[in-house]
Image (tube, rainbow, N blue to C red; front, side, top):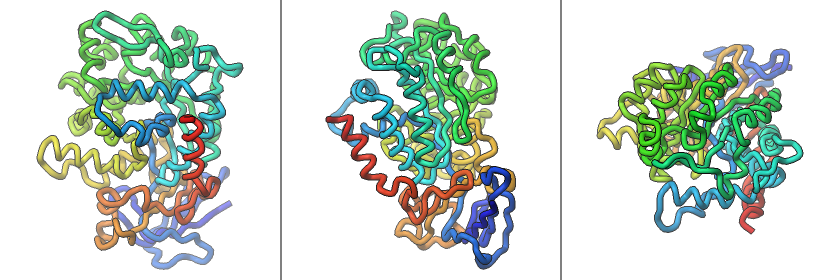
Length: 450
C-alpha cells in the first residue's frame, strides 16, 4: 500500500526544502519509496503535513521507570547518589504488569514528542528479592510490548549488572533493590539475554551498566565477544567518584579499563561520558565509539557538562537521550548540547542546527542498531515527525530559518504529526492509540506511589 504525504517544508539533511512529496510503501509498507521536491501544492489524496517535517527522532538512552520520579525529586538538596536512593525505591515496586502500564504511557509521551525509536537501558530483570520470574525476561518483554502499544520501535539494551558499586576498597555486593538487577554471572546474564528475540518493531542490544557494576574478573573480553554485532551501551564516568574508585582499584580510568579489555569499537556507545581525561577522549574517538549525551538529566542531577565537542572532533559520533525523563524533549536535548558548550567556553556556534538534528535522528538511530532510519530518502524507514512553525514559540522567523527554529525554539509541544514505519501514530497532537496519554501516565505513576 502506498501512502503519499505532502510536507509544506521538509528537512533534507542540510536545509529545509519547501513543497516535498514523500511516498511510503514497499513490501511491508514501512519504507520511503520516493521523495520529490518542488511540489508547490498537495497532490490529490495526499496527507498534508503543515510546518516542518523531520525524520523521526531517536531517544538513544532511556530508563522508562525514572519517569515516575519527575518532580518528586525536585525538593531539598543532594547529589546523584542521594537521588539514586529515591530511584531505587521506585525500582523496588515494579512488576511486569505495572512496568508495562508505565512504559506504555512513557513511550506514548515519547511519540507525542516526535520520537520514533527508543533505546531502553534495561536492568530491572527479576523479582524484588532477585528471584527470576517464570519467564526470566518478563520485565524486558513488558517493555517490548509497551513500545508496540505506543507505536514506536525499541532497542532493548539488556544490561549485565553484577555488583552493587565500586569503592577504593573494591566491589560491593548487590544489596536491597539492586538484587533484582543481577544474574549472578556473565553466563547467567547471557543465558537469559540469548532468549530474547527480535521483532519487527524491536531489536536486541546489550549493555554493561558501568565499571561499578561489572568487573574485569567478570569477563569484559568474553562479554565483547558474545555481543559482537549488536549495539552495546555503557554508562561511563558519569560521576567523579566512579573515576576515583576505578583509578584506586584498577590504576586507570573507566575508559582506560575498558580499552585494556578491548571493549571500544564502532557500534559501542558510551553514555554520559561526563568526566573524561584528554586520553579518554582520544581512546573513544580513535576507536570510533559513539557517545550519547543526556544534557537535561546531566544538569538535573548536577552531574556536569560532558566534553561533547572534543569527543566529536576526536571521532566519536554523538547521539542524544532523555535518560531520567526530567523532560522528554529531544529538541531540548539537541539545543542543550550547543548551549551547554557555550556556557563552558563562552563562545557561540559550535554546531549548526543541522548537525544537532543529525545527532537526534540518523546518528541516534545508528547507535540503536537501526541504520536504515533517521533520513528522509528512498529506502529509509518511513518515520516522519512534523512540527508547527506557527506556534507562539516558532512563529516569526519564516521558512528560511525553519531548521534553526526547530532546534533553538521549538519543543515537544510543537509536534503535530508522527508516522513510524509508515503507520500514523500521532495526528494533530493526539496519540491515536492512547489519546489520553496524561491520564495513562497519572494512573501508572500513581499506582507506584500508593
